[in-house]
Image (cartoon, rainbow over all chains, first blue to last red; front, side, top):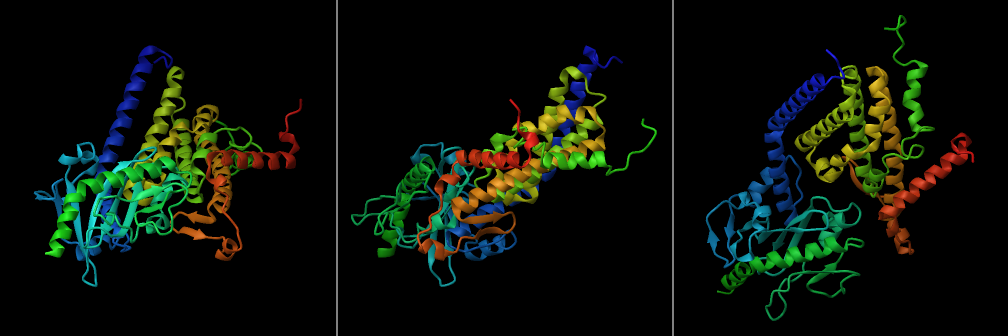
Amino acid sequence: MDKQGNLYTFIYAAVMVIIVASTLALVSQGLKPLQARNEMVAKKTDILQSVNIASTNKNAEAKFEEVIGESSYIVNYKGEKVEGVAFDVDLAKEVRKPLEERLYPVYEARLEDGEVKYVLQFRGNGLWGPLWGYVSLDDDGETIYGATFGHKSETPGLGAEIANESFQAQFKGKEIFNSNGELVSVSVVKGGAPDDAMSAVDAVSGGTITSEGLENMLRNFFKGYEQFLNNIERERHE
Amino acid sequence: MSSEKEPLFSAKNLKLLTVPLGSQNPITVQVLGICSALAVTAKLEPSIVMALSVVFVLVFANLIVSLIRNSIPSRIRIIVQLVVVAALVILVDQILKAFAYEVSQQLSVFVGLIITNCIIMGRLEAFALSNKPWPSVLDGIGNAAGYGLILIIVGFVRELFGSGTLSFPGIGTLNVIPAAFYEMGYVNNGFMILPPMALIVVGIIIWVQRSRDKSLVESN
């Protein structure tokens, strides 16, 4: 057959596409369970990290079971519990809905000393792609106990620094309500927050848009969780 | 078929491995693949992983294209090469996600960037299309290693002076600048983290290389 002819070229292209497409489809299907498991374990590792418990691929599931187990639930904008499994909530979808209609997952972590921390879940946008994170609060519903953030594609060395422990450690002990009980979230301040700021942290240098994205994400979701957090505080005082 | 069988590592074949490391380096001499050299080298770890991924993709792309070189219709050869490279890159991405999830998280967009790396298309077009599989594999290793070498040097310099740390895949981040230095007033050069410094570091490497090897200097 003429190798430069039209027919040969068409057949060649068609056969090549079929072979490549079926190989990729097979590989993708075959590896999917492994990938899904990795994602689930990574999520559990993140949640544990937000209550300052380090875990590895191997022990994340066992530790998650121990610290959180079944004590997770979904709340709505009014702070009421709704039906559903918190772990299955896809914030990538929720974030597109208006604040009032979103589902907000809550994980209650019981630490070894018996203290209860509330882990809240966040999602927003950075410079190049989505940001996400988990913030844990003390049982007063306003003091941050720990935080962990992740990102899809922020610039390494700049915006990507939000995933660094030294950046995340700044959040410990910050208050998300001011002394009048108004929600202020946590500001990410370019050029550095004052040392005594109760509700602000230093931005990452060279990562202005990522820092702003992070600040918006926190403000946005804390607003969504506000009623729930007020309820916690009220229950504590009763 | 040649009547004499060439040894696997003949002088000619070895040259395929070593020349791209030095006098025919894809980045410093041919100035290919600069964009990814800028993007991933702010830290050492992604530089190393990127280098390894490119070795994998280029070796297999070269091998596959070389194996089917006599069947490829010349009018669609670029498309065939692209399909081979794209398929390999997706494979790498899927395999990393399944077996090295954390690495794949760090590399994220850069894996996709391999497709746009002109070194890969360049080697397929210039070498694999007209050579036998084994030399093509060696050529792939050589060129990817020459690319990776520069990437790792740049990543090393930028992370060391920009962040004061060095990070390795599987080991994590090591603080190499002692805390005492910072107490004495040493400050990380934040400029090193920004993309333009990658270009300047590559420029310095080119300068050093050309001042040592005069044959690379163009005569006017």
